[in-house]
Length: 295
Image (cartoon, rainbow, N blue to C red; front, top):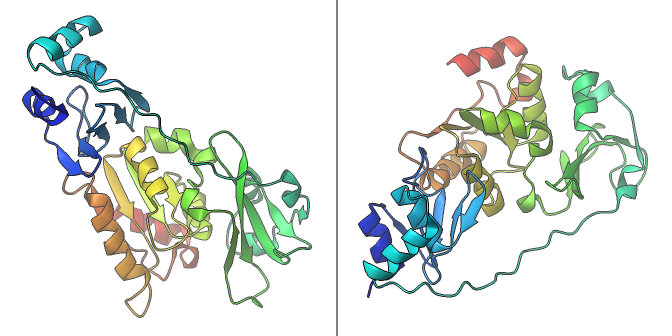
């Protein structure tokens, strides 16, 4: 009697063993990712992160074989493989706490800091937020973070005074943020390339240069949630553009660590490290950024 692995191999899948699940590239559509399709070993339940679809094992067999009738797929599974589909186990979804909208009431329009760094009023208005006039974010320009259900799940503030040790202060689980997909999802999902940067400041600098297919990592690591988002987007090219630190450490080393992590899930050559020519994109003018893009 065959199991999930036996059936997948016979169908022609090149599977990777990842504990509770197998990861692979789908055979029913084109994909540059070698792990965008995931199948649970115990149930056969599968998820295609790029197309945001999931289903029982017989549906995957139907898609793979190009069958129009799922009943035919069930017959093949039962007759050819003697495979009995296990029952699917319900999984608990991890809840991300929603922040009260009142947290944004202390923000006022103030374009002085970002305007001085070449960011237009139109761009700042697009991303929302403003300068905090009281509270723990006092003196910082605060950006709201929303999830796909348009719920406020975080805020992050950039120091504009030069008096705080921390440039950025966060409220909320950065490991669960996928920013700024609430603004540029259509751009990113239709682009063949995705650029990963450390901070909102880097993202804004690229945005002003017309480069809008970006996501922010909020630090030097790729969180599991962000990796899942990348897999769903399934880009043909991923550029890791962390800060180009003068000492050759921090952002530089982290970029190659991030590349190694993401590369496991994509074909060879899809993920590249391409550091800014200066410390970060905020230090570069539009001409330098466009030259970086072409290089």
